[in-house]
Every structure is written in structure tokens, then in C-alpha cells.
Amino acid sequence: MRFDSSIFLLPFLPTLVSAWYPPTLQGYNLVWYDQFEGNSATLPNTGRWNIINGKLNVNNELETYSSSTRTVQVSGGYTLQIVPWRQQNGNGDWISGRIESTYTFTPQAGKKTVAQADIRFGSNPTNTKAGIWPAFWLLGQELRTGGSWPACGELDILETVNGDLRGYGTLHCGTNPGGPCNEPTGKGASTVIPNQDWHTWKIEWDRTSGDWYTSKITWYMDGVKFHEVSGQSLNDWTAFDKISNKPLFFILNVAVGGNWPGYPNGNTQDGYGSMMEVGYVAHYVSY
View (cartoon, one colour):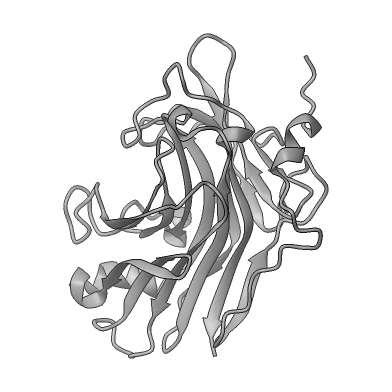
């Protein structure tokens, strides 16, 4: 049967007619963003994003990432849709989408820096999302140039698993196991997500003190703080430097299965109702 994406797209288009432009943040300049313009059922801009293809063999996840527009596509309504699909091969295999920005940024000394996105989840009932693991996060560019995890640094701005209406923000750093970030668990906190509709997920670096020890990184949902790590609380200059003074890149993906969420079951639904949809991704720096 031929896959006709138009059958599935219409219920999930945002109500906005014009471009979904990142909001103005008082006291900040908008430095970089993607509002995911383009025709429906097309790939996001490959000048801005690397579209991952293949199995990464991490965290005992099930999915194979695909660069097909079935798993990663611009909606035509100025959003990005990342969609997991169960393969009909009887082996329990899944395909899904992951994109990584070609753009990198380093939080500026003496400034505040923000990375932010508006995100919603597909409308499948939450109890039909066992094993579904959407995420908006950052990795250290060092990993692309021969570095290793978790020394490269990882900042998870939003993760949620199994349809649970709880968002997790986590820092990974240092060495595994143990180290300053207590790997592989990381230093994290969580917040209740009111519903599966649009919410704003933000991480902010405050380096205005000029001192790494009093600098801090703060996680927000809809402007409400739910997690914070400072140089003092981490108490490791090398680890804090990697996540606050070295280049980082954006990642958007929907994993399936793995050590944390566990695995899909017979009630797990695939498709657009289990997707992650992104209105924009943006990077700001204070005046």
C-alpha cells in the first residue's frame, strides 16, 4: 500500500497561518533559529540539520533512524514532526527520526545564553506510549571530533518516557560510572507536564558573574524553573567548562525502547499520534 502522508498530516497542523517565529525574549538577541518552513512531507533544511540514518546501538534502544520523510518531516505548517513507526516484519523492529544541528554555539562569558524550543506530543492516549522516548537536548561538539561520552558533556533540556506527563532535565558529564554527574544517571530533576499540547522548554546559562564557580545553568518549562546546576554544586571545573564554555549542538529525536523506558508492548501505538512536534528551535544571547 502506498503511504499517503496527507492522510495523517491535517489533524496535527498548528492553527497558525503565518510562520511560527521564535518569541522575543526581553534583554536578549535572537542569534540563530529554525522555524521549519517548507512544504509538507519534505525534509528539514539539510544545511541546518544532519538527518541521522541507521542504528546507533546506544542505550539498548530498538529504533533504526531513517532519513525518510515518513519519520522526519516538515509539516507544511511551520513545524517539524518526528514520527516513530513499528515495522511490520514480526521482529519488533521500529524506525524513527533524529536530527542534529550543523550549527554549534558556545555560551558566552559575561552573558546569559538561552536554548529554547516549543514542543508538543502526538494525541495518542498516554497509556499507549510504552517505550516511546522523545527528547530535545545538546551534546558537546567534542564528541564529533574524537571525544567521548560523558566527558564531552550532555544537557537534556526535555526528555519524557512512556507517555508519562513528566519532563526531565538532566546534565551528563565527567566520567562513567560515577564522576561529578553520578553517571550513568546524571544530575537531573523533573516537572509535571500539564498536557500533551504546546509547551516551551528552555535552558539558560548565566555566566554574568565572570566566575565559573558561581555561574549556573537553569532548566525551565513555560518559564517556570525546575532544575539548576552551578559550578559550585558540580564542584568540578573541567566538567563545568565542557558544558558552559565549549561548543554544543542541538539534537531532536524520538527513541524507542531502551534501558530507561523499557520496551513497547502490545498496547503501544505508532505513527503521528506518538510523534514529537517542534514549532521552532532558537539560540539567544543577552545584550
